[in-house]
Length: 463
Image 1: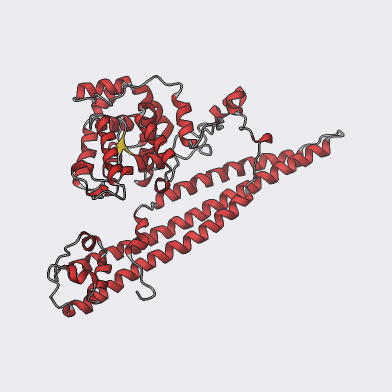
Image 2: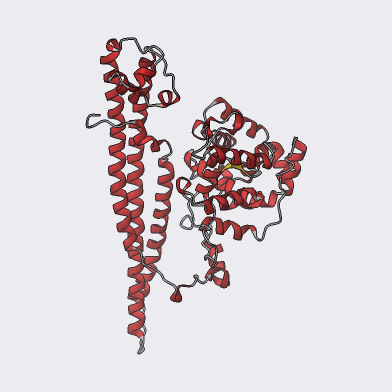
């Protein structure tokens, strides 16, 4: 292929890229910058306006200077990181625009190719239109696999070449814009990281949990909870916890969830007997309302949004069916299997990591994302840990809420506080929960409407 052209497969990852989520991370860094800047002025006053006559005054002044410079350096690092992510988000938006243009042109090429026959084999049908045309015009490969292979393609050659090059050019623009922006962003983030101090605990032990140990710190945190510098609008409260020793491959997010649920009541499970009607759904919601409420509060969501999704999902299917689906897909994923997981019949079709688990059904890959794992590179141990967590009703509620918070940000409602989220916005988030990238489909929209119609019953059950 000539220089300046790329295939769709080279930039297909842009489908999953979401500029609002990148900007949300940038906003978190900017919030930390603003918080540190606010600390800087009192530190400067303490350093320059405090007169202390004693033998240790020079040590006092030196320590204040060190602290002020440390705060300023950290603020600079977070500011640089925020700027880098905002620039990358803008570039991804541009790259996605080029990608959409390429797909639009590619569909026109596919329609033109279809006038010359229909691909017979699975490989030919699944190939990109650009690949198909490259083989057709070379009279090799897919040409021999077309139902009407004897037809002459010369009459479409000029137009097909134009569409092929236009699509490839758009994909190449998308690739170039994203690659260059990513390289710049990564370089800037490395520079920002180098501006941050590295705090180490002597002996390599766990950090002391000062928040839990000191009542005055907890009181200060409670007083500052309403400040916009302590958390972004529309998000849940921030709270870091120290990692306990011997937790293996457990992510910080999963560790935090397990610590939070330790003080919550046990939840009803629906593994063997999912609710079959509204009365049983209401009973399940009512019994688990404390867990659902805590999960919603942790993710900065309205409790009726989390409970409403639970209302829709808990009657879906038996938990044992999820396990059976996972086992069948896993077997089909073997190199010796005659059929690929995606080609399995009925609802069995799909990859193992697309299998949903738990009373509030969540795909394993989405659960991995919420818990901070890389879905594309899950180890067996991590996969087992995510699956185990999804199947526990209490952890499942927190993971579902975390995914809903991501969808809220993707929808452009990240800054909307929980109490201001409208029914229409919640219906859209519900549709996104069901349909993913196809949330505007009729099926996903119906799901969102059903969710909205049940909100009255959900609110009654949560009382």
